[in-house]
Length: 132
Image (cartoon, rainbow, N blue to C red; front, side, top):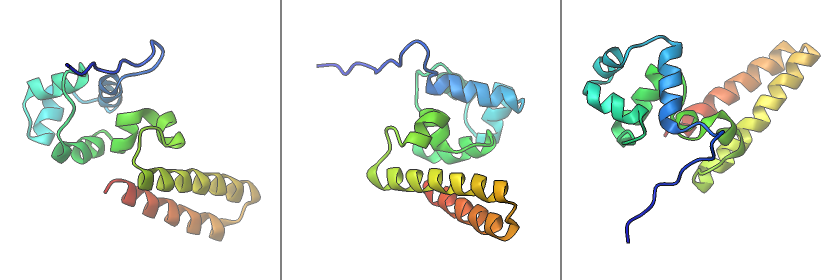
């Protein structure tokens, strides 16, 4: 039996739409993005129309070229904050990252610069591990 593609609800943005939105925000044209990633123009076009998902070797470079993480491109910022669709280990790191972000906000509100610096360093570490 053929597998059906899961369609998001009408209000939910697709992965391809997120890739396009981030590309246009920089702004980069499709040919420029293709050249940066050493892929064809047709490949970038397929990613944006959701006809193809980027291969694993292209996911992190694509996210870096667009100034975000692969998790955000794949699941959207709201999905990442909630750990939607992620592996169990990634879900734990995502929950920890959300907790660290709340701690940063509390530290900034209290004016504690040293605590703020330490928490930001921890957030950076969690972000790097999320990309692996």
